[in-house]
Length: 155
Image (cartoon, rainbow, N blue to C red; front, top):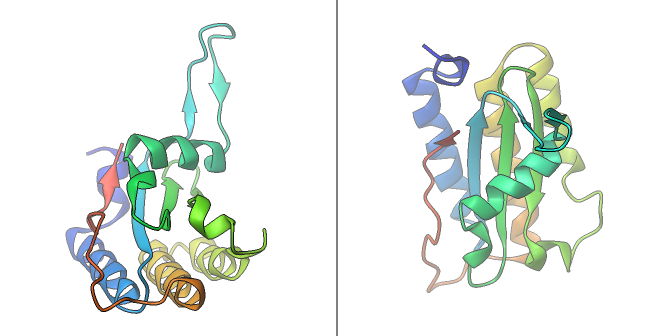
């Protein structure tokens, strides 16, 4: 079993998917979680190049076509499983309205749980915090549709 597959149990993954649904009930924002072994890839010139978790989050964000939401308010929570590093990245619609420190409180709650090895709870609380923050700028709309899957993606 890969590190990614062993990172969370099936029940833990389901709890995270449920947290995404709960967070999205209060906002038109769209939240996804992506897990993969690490954030490095080979660069053709140097033969090895490690991306930061944030750089990789941006790359995965676009690979998953998350920029195609109506309000450009998609959010990815990226986790590099082997290093236990993570990043939160929000689309242009969010960053046009918020300060650079917008995700700090969600990152802090996640980090406190990750340090204790409680990855499920860290992700759940980070997701719920992100949903609360998004609600201020992107409240849930009556005609809101779920534009992105709530399922955890893996790489």
